[in-house]
Length: 354
Ligand SMILES: Nc1ncnc2c1ncn2[C@@H]1O[C@H](COP(=O)(O)O)[C@@H](OP(=O)(O)O)[C@H]1O
Ligand SMILES: [Mg+2]
Figure 1 (cartoon, rainbow, N blue to C red):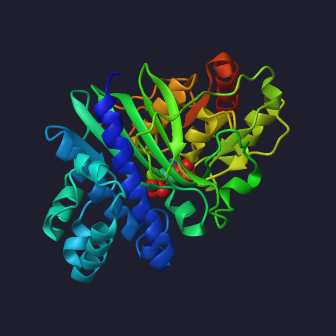
Figure 2: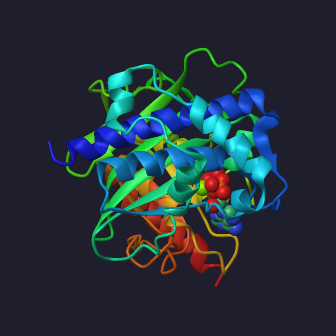
């Protein structure tokens, strides 16, 4: 299989980092730093970024990484650095052979800072570049809802390997989405899933617990005979995706089921396994540029499960121009068979606002 080693390393790295984020949630009052409200950051973001980048660079020392965070805050604040360092040292996989595959523990606090800062790549069209969101859906993480640890390898600007760890999604691929999935993460029974995909090789899911390298279950989008029966997902945050436009699109498609709101790329994973059908992310701000780490992994997983993903105007997402998708506005993901039907209506709704 192509990119087998990349997928294995990404699965283990994301698994280990997701365990760290769970420990932050339960034992550190969620670890929030008082940064801006629109883009909160937690100690879990730094710890997860350090672990994942050190895993990637251990296995593939010549690759680049575009990571959401940098270590400036930790360098400026020694007690914060110490807190993250304790977390990072405590995060271990049960399986020592698996731990060795991703380079074992990080050796020192300075190495941890360097790993975090190795995520400063500007991205680009050439070569192997990983896109990393250590905690995607930070607001979901803080409210006890959905969040995800997301990692993708882009080859010459094309997302090629994608892995998403979703500690609060049901393990079972057959559990259909309902409105509670975005908010009810208190009951951790039967939750935690790790999605993976390689371009041309299909998408899989497996429990987030031990055994990340098991083959996984093949997942695919649900065949939708009648678009009016679709379940569509959108952000919880109305500032990230226009709930009004999304509702207008759903109504024009004849959809009567209420949307399922959840944070993070758990939306991509959920539609890829057929738990829901569509993901609508209609832009709110005219100037906001979507970040590559918020989409790269989800795009491979949905495409390989039989879906199509473009921006809201039907333009292919261009991951090769830097850290953002600056040539695109919004995101629409749907099963291939109904994609043109959906995008036509999205364009009508957007066009009416011009
Ligand atoms: N105005 C905006 N429009 C669209 N996305 C935004 C936004 N402001 C922040 N975001 C991004 O939305 C992501 C969460 O997406 P969702 O709403 O699907 O959960 C955030 O990721 P982080 O939580 O990693 O910061 C952030 O990068
Ligand atoms: Mg994000």
